Amino acid sequence: MILDINFIKKFEGFFNQNVNLSNYSWFNLGGNAEYFYKAKNENQLIEFLREAKKQNLKTTVLGAGSNTLFRDNGVKGVVIKLGNEFSYTKLINKNILDVGAATLDRKVANYAKENNVGNLEFLSCIPGSIGGSIIMNSGCYENDISKVLVSIRALDQKKLSIIEIKKEDIKFLYRGTNLSNDLIIVSAKLKGTTSVMKKIEKKQSDFIEKKKSSQPSQIKTCGSTFKNISKDKKAWKLIKEAGCEDYREGDAFISQKHCNFFVNNGNAKSSDIENLINKVKKKVYEKTGVNLELEIKIVGEK
Image (cartoon, rainbow, N blue to C red; front, side, top):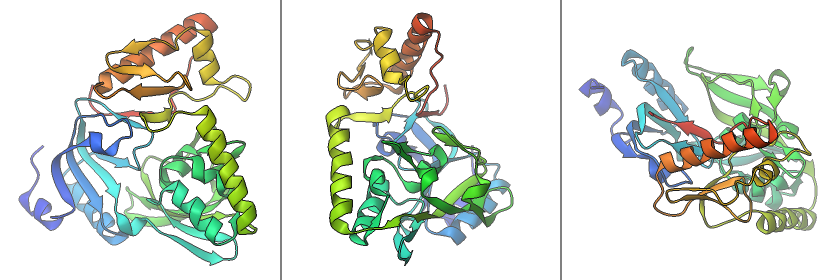
């Protein structure tokens, strides 16, 4: 798609063409974004979307890339990523935080600890940013975002305005919500409990150690590939029961430490990961009758 030169000039420094998306996914895989825009602030983002509409540009919003597999053929239209001004954490009373959507979850956990706000320790174990975590209703160890969220502020791409949505008006699912794809979360309020740093530190440390003992680290992965079916029916158990733990496709394989983690060994293609996903999904269904649902997102042109 060829864009109006004035549109490109207007957002110069924030807008680029043919950007390699492998730098923005924890798999380190993917083709190019046709266009890539990094939003400076809310006002600029609204203006960009207004102009993008005139250009009929399809938009894809990217968080931290911790659960996204970009296909080898890349993404048509524009990939939007929130910039540094969307990454902040502020204490607005003794146990409520105002958090920018691009803020990494672990940074929120650490800020809360330093300010004696408890019940947010689990965020230290969640990869990604707050905006993506809210959309996914991310969680671990009997905790999830829905339990600590107060409200969100989001940009409605259709109306080009910022709206506030209270927690009570959001339907939370297991690893999901009913929030419209037309919304771009820009900030959120999270509520913790008044605590003391020593107690928070201990709880946070216990969570981190638990994660280290059961999940691989320092590898190219996007974490849990499939959603758990229930508390007692874990995806990794079904994968193991189906005999898939040694499956490989090209340079993509399944982690021996946690077989719901699919890994780029260094020279895999996105298609290797996707083929491995489909192979495992098919085998699990044949063996158990369970149709596994993806937790990661696969984005781009086939």
